[in-house]
Length: 318
Image 1 (cartoon, rainbow, N blue to C red):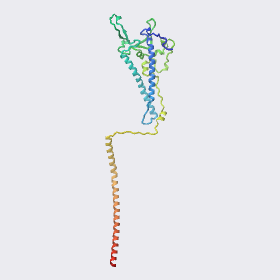
Image 2 (cartoon, rainbow, N blue to C red; image 1 turned 180 degrees about the vertical axis):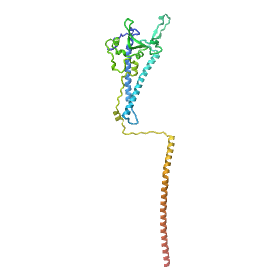
Image 3 (cartoon, rainbow, N blue to C red; image 1 turned 30 degrees about the vertical axis):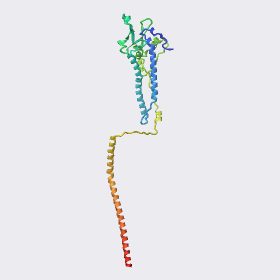
Image 4 (tube, one colour; image 1 turned 90 degrees about the vertical axis):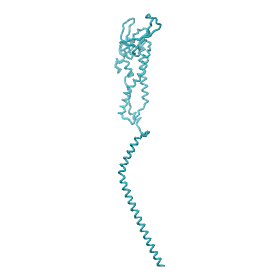
């Protein structure tokens, strides 16, 4: 059974200040906020699962936990901002363009001819709530919510609930205190509704809807981590990379002088030894050459002597 079934279908039967004119709108708006919050979180979860973690090396388990804890805190702070940005845009556009809700809670039409004027047109007049707050100047104007008894000016305060320029804005400034109180629920819905249990929620009963909205109506954030799965998936068997390095004149100048300095040290050490080796090699080759020349000269001399003796013998024989 719907909790609003006890309300009169024609809301105009209630006094303009009677909270029952707002109740259906508030409950529908609360349901819409919860659904939008759920969809936002679900879409964000799908997007997160499609992302990749890229690091220069395999993270240790401690670094892995610290990385995702920091990421979770950043994400927890940023996601509600994305959720609220669109909502605040809609509320500001509605107020800036002076849109009138069906309940006529921010402006009312005035008929000048009822005041004795001969004007043939109607104009709108901004409603004023507590502390002389005009809906023409602010969308945050509100007053406490009351129930009016039938055919009576007697009012009963609905604790925690507000009425204001628009049902949505006044509901943001309301709390769910009434939904934790069986007597308050009885005033609104009869005996068919069971009150909420405060121990089932981390939020206090006087937490405003605006605060709940800022936390996406979430009781807690859970991001389970599995380092074993990460390790098995990301442990590299081989790594390689290529990169294109641009020409850097300063780098080449420094490299050149560094090389020159290094070569100077090397040559300073090796040149004396190299000269000494070349000198000994030269001496060795020179000695070897002299020995060869001496041997050849001796052989030629011996041959000449033999030749001379042969000539002498031939002369005597003749």
